[in-house]
Image 1 (cartoon, rainbow, N blue to C red):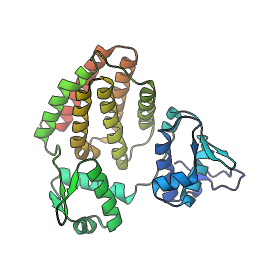
Image 2 (image 1 turned 180 degrees about the vertical axis):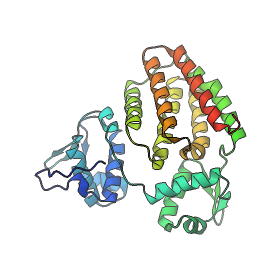
Image 3 (image 1 turned 90 degrees about the horizontal axis):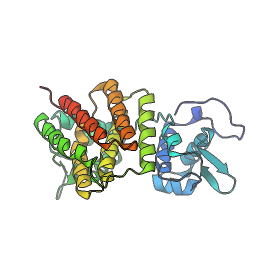
Image 4 (image 1 turned 180 degrees about the horizontal axis):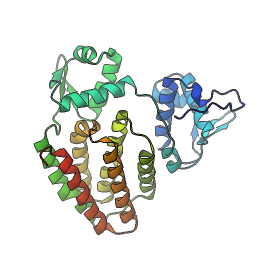
Length: 305
């Protein structure tokens, strides 16, 4: 979150006074707010319970967000959400990279490069990445949630299969070239207006911000939501199920971004072009754009291409 050194006149800490924890909490609060409608109420107690932290950093984060004009403080009733999802997406939240995010990215890189074995113990990961057991357990829980690891019987953890070499990545793209353009021309295709507005706002926000390597996690999740959301809009559950499986397999490969900020901009603009065509009802054109988008991405996935 960009710092502001002005006092708000109410004794609340300016944004520049936020600690790294409070900055991180502010980013998490914004993520939680994206699921709410304008005018929804938020309380320190419920957010602290939801995020697993004390009320103090939540209080500072809410005050900072009120300064940014996305929340309004209501005496005796907490805060009320102002504005739209697009306004939330436009917030420039430069939260510091947590140890858990750093280790998540490092594991993705090491697995992709073959530097991390299929079976590991918590102690192995603690030594390798120089972090505490609680951090390792948090990362393993995230990996288990998305189907990337499972606990072995007795001791240790085992990584699940993923698209970890060029040949299987190309197979994945060839499969996606068959299903994703076709999903856009299904008879029952219908875009949800709020999803479309959210996607557009978040892609535009990604284009505006300066790239950091730690943004790879946010980029992957945005990319995954985009492709899965379009598959869901087809009205055909089998397209959606196939895309969900592809996203699970792609997570480790794509979360470690190696193509630089220029390719981020290209990808976001191509996504926005497809959304514009779909909103205008030009689904056949959008399908052609999707086919070209995936073909170009498949070249990047193939070192020999």
